[in-house]
Length: 286
Image (cartoon, rainbow, N blue to C red; front, side):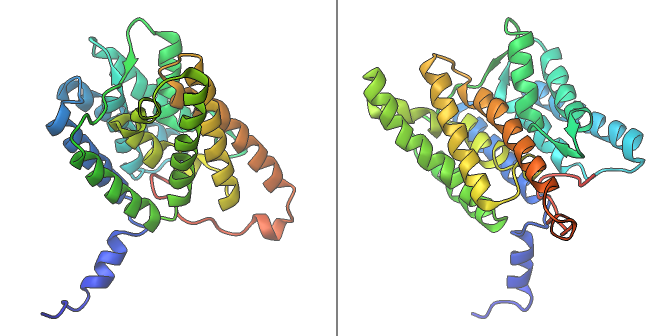
């Protein structure tokens, strides 16, 4: 049986960094697998509210700031991430978290670049401002291994295709190594320290938050170093009994790394710094 002419190039284009709709499709897969297997959502209506708010704010702010209609892939990822990751008996935290996330993209910038991943920033802000109304997802995949394998295999393939797998791989390797360190410190079983990374929360974190092209440093070695430092900071938060350790670790390490990267880039010769960047995989280029 022969392969149809044009089939392989079409597949290559689909799984490429230029396809901005590949990450939204993947995050929707995480949602469906997690919901069907373990019911990870608080409710579909709350998640839809988060997505709708994110899209509405993206459209409004992009028009106000840039006078253009944006690609909505980034807003969709932000909204669905909020819908999956936060827990509240109320509806308004879902809308407010999405609104903070999208607004931060346009307001919190330095020298034209973002400092925080939008959804990560918004979730941390809400955890600090309204802890009595909001919590985060803490479900693991349980003893059924196939949902995790589906997500991890596809996620690893996609991040490799869009040239971000080294970030995910560095973080996961660091997390596993530091889980051994935590075991020595706390006396907890090694598998208990590793267990959190098997949950849906971490799938979003390692495949979307820490690999976000708009909020990662430019060099490959720098990206790996930042991923390692995030894992180290997370260990510190986790040892302090903070259940939201990965979010706060990225919130602390991420902007510091971005500021250092921006300052270093500004010192390079104009010809070097003016080289065009690859198109972001997850959202609109301002």
